[in-house]
Length: 225
Image 1 (cartoon, rainbow, N blue to C red):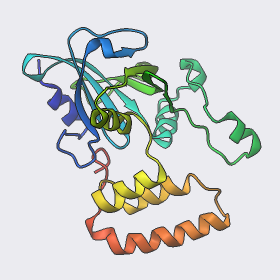
Image 2 (image 1 turned 90 degrees about the vertical axis):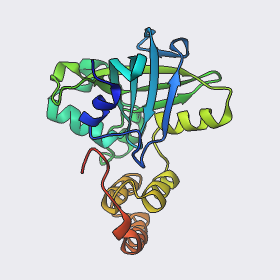
Image 3 (image 1 turned 45 degrees about the vertical axis):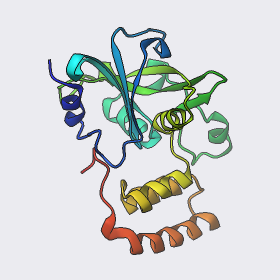
Image 4 (image 1 turned 60 degrees about the vertical axis):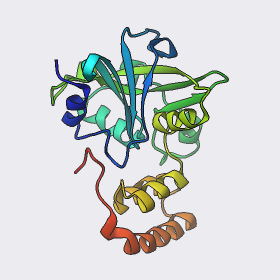
């Protein structure tokens, strides 16, 4: 069996990518995946837009794993391309009030809840392996519960790995680390504002200024190169 590093490579990812937020072992009793515990070593590998949970044995030998999508735009596009209705897999919309108040607001499906002892993540995902294509039936709703670490550094890195990035996080990712392109950053940030609003216009001008200064150093996300 191949190593989980080869599985990551199938998705054009590596633990050496600049966009890696976390690459830690998690004890099996510290994580629940749809209510189940995996036997064996578990590795959490988080990126800006997705995170992986890999079950492995000696010498990083891959046993099984999943990918969880954090970007709502990617989730919507994936569901659309696969012709899968969110209701068919019990994937709930997390912003119904926003949608009811404004018809232009797009549905969001990623959910993150910081509980007293655990992080609870609900989103779209599927099993991974050495295949490059997966059946639409592999797309399912995942609920991941991860016990918070007592180590403050590990706790912070795990949180960044499993949650969506804030506006400031995205600016940090794009400008300082260069892990997402200026166009992607613009789309992400403007998605948080009403199109055509004064804030929207101001943000566009601000991002254009930033982008013109930093564009030579930007590269695409690892799965979009």
